[in-house]
Image (cartoon, rainbow, N blue to C red; front, side):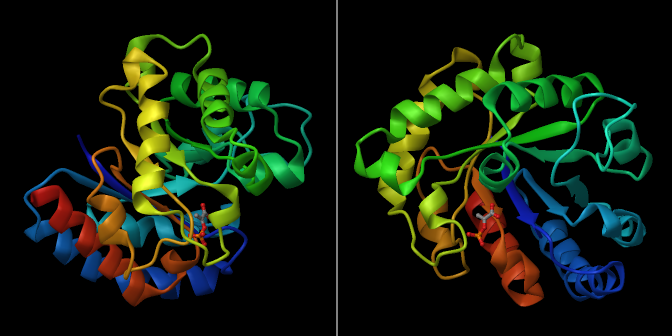
Length: 255
Ligand code: PEP
């Protein structure tokens, strides 16, 4: 199983700031990856407006892929303010985060919309990183597994096994995102085992944990059998922290 470290920069960094951030971590991440003997993929997802600025520096590492944080399901047309898969591909984007809880919560993204986007991304040759997760209320009601399995099955609806094999999933308990409140690693692993078990084709699909991952807690998640890496928000905006997260993942992948 590949180990994946994906940084989600959210609505942070102008193009100039993004270039500075990449300059601060990309050569160091490149060195870590050159010395790693396990299969590890590193992705960073800046805002759309910074994709073009950071693409050349990331490409020079030969090892850090460019991701986007969202895209529309249609390829072009009257969708004011939206960005299409061909626009992303044109900038060198190879991964796209879909169904992040902030998209679902603040922009009304439904399971059906996420599924349409996943299908388009796959058809266009992008690797979707599909995020699922429960709210605090759902967790307290004992509905975590039901919620994430429903979201996962909806995202995969209509996909064949080969298409599913090109996906990455991310389990992100919403109450743990950006809050500093960690989900216990064993508890997260149990939920992620449930996600993996909900469809036979997920056997070899990396499932990432996301939610206040930091250098001091990442190793505990990586040690879990169903955790294949991290989707990282806040800590991916700190060059030193991001390098350390990649180093931890590379050690886990090699070990
Ligand atoms: C995220 O943006 O998906 C995320 C998990 O954020 P953070 O690491 O800041 O909790």
